[in-house]
Image 1 (cartoon, one colour):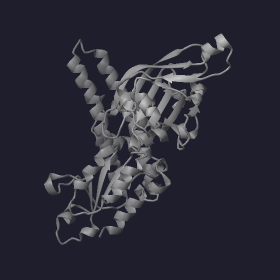
Image 2 (image 1 turned 90 degrees about the vertical axis):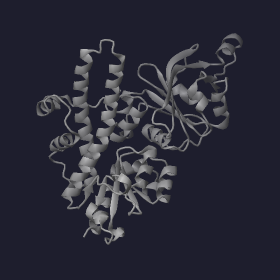
Image 3 (image 1 turned 30 degrees about the vertical axis):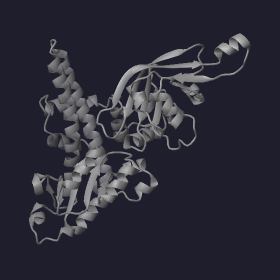
Image 4 (image 1 turned 120 degrees about the vertical axis):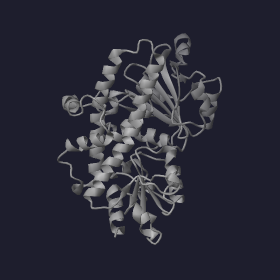
Length: 408
């Protein structure tokens, strides 16, 4: 196990595309998979049946929360009895799934993942075919070619591809893996600066940038943006861990509603803070690039695009050429929410959307192109997309140059 890599959370992972027959198996009462030889690399060759506690999960782009059910998976050699009793030297390992909500959602073409955790439990994921989350799962675990019928298996998980960074951490947390990223050496300074409370997002973003004095946007805007976001995430989780620990130590004295409310506040703070932090750091990039803009102005129907270039006054001036106006939506993660951007800033026909979402499916990016929406991502995330998609993507530096050339 190597800290900071997938091996910290998984001992091995096996992935395959479900065939029509296998999907039928999952949705019926006969949940035994044959032809799982690849799984022997991570589950071994035990004597007798081995029953693993397992978490089952069904993932799709259409729901923010996955379907999750606890259960078990059974791994065994169906030919063991024949070898013992009749000397037939054959091995035929099988994997047994119980009937549950997740197995009943499975369809042909879906991605099936069997991952072994260090605590000897298994994670069984079914991800809907041709979705962003399916592409993200494949990218996370380092799989690209699933054309053969059996499982593709990876062990050790300690290559450079397996290093846990911003994008991979986000995907891991979407499948219920709590990734600890803190920097305790900064805790005292954070507590002193902010009096042991959560500051505003703008204040915290500024503080995060101040801890990286050597990061200069002039040396690379894409690198600077990701460095600032990564540092803010780590420092925020450091403060959050401390403050949550203090609150939990006080207890809730049987107040279930109070505990649920506290838990929801933690989740909501994480989601809203990430998006605002991204806007904060982008604003600094635009300022230092000499780009004029208005942040979250009101346009038609009370909509508030994240950025209008060169500004809201030009936007509200009918005589100003609409072809010189630019709008940028900002979403740290977008899923199906990218369509919200289409209804903003009606004067601007072509929209731009900046996100940190890795490996968005081709179906989604094709639809974005059809809807006249240009996707913008930091250059470091472009390699999570296919070669065809990369030819269309815009990076942060390209976007700022595009806006600069348009401004008066």
